[in-house]
Image (cartoon, rainbow, N blue to C red; front, side, top):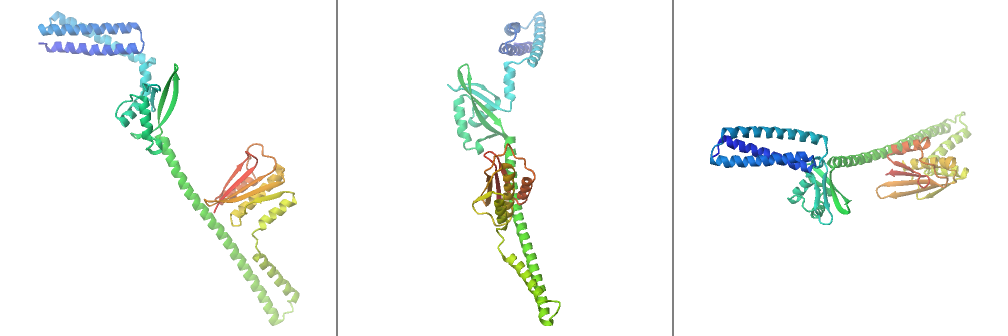
Length: 403
């Protein structure tokens, strides 16, 4: 029957034996000095022999004092050697790159990595994240890369945006084909894009809010323009009312009192002025701005060629006339052209598109917006519209007015 102390000796032998066996495996794996490997193997053999001796002797009779003392010395020496080996191994790992350190580094990466042979699906590299994904999806480790890849692609087809969610992570799969020593391998990389995905989702929400805000601003701008027109009409009506009232008062005074200060000629001139003003108000002035532009262009030898219907409602009319005027000026001054092309059309999503180009020399490089173009952009954006200038195939000004 083994005594308590003999059990302790046997336990220590086993602990140091297995520790030395693991160190020996590490030394071989890391291709360290042969002396370290031989020493570890020698210690393992001695400890195994000691363990068997203690066990066999203890089963027959108690250990002698001399043998116990020798055994204590042996265990103490091997314990010290084992501790020194551990310290040296830690120091060596901190100063050198080994297969273990590479494997540990791959496991600590935030990216799941799996590499398998294309010919038979045998995995040659699988880090902890890729293995965890396999366990979560299929209940086993990644055994065959081809099967795993096929099952994974089938699974993510039903996932949102073809992304795999796991433990508050969102993984996107990227496949790379590798060629190593004339053998073909497939590399699977699982990137955690949750932070980027959340940011994109927030950006989409912000864009939707901005679109709604822009729609409200455009609606407000249309109301402001309508209000300006109404205010102008009210002012005109008030002036017509006052002028007619004044003319009628003077006429009545002339007819009733026969005032010598008021001659027929003065009265006639007064009424003609009032009638001319009323006539100018009642005339259709919708095309005045465009007529002035066409007349001015003709005077300087430039033709304005239109395709589509020019807008008549505000603010599109004001924006269009200003844009044509600015392009006409730039065509003469910079492009040296003699034709300005204006194309207008509607889009289904409540957009009025105005495109203006010319037949002059194309701009040399990007146009720097200053002066007239800068002022035009300010007015366009204040009206809730958009403006874009392209120089790829000559000058092209595109304005999009919402209505």
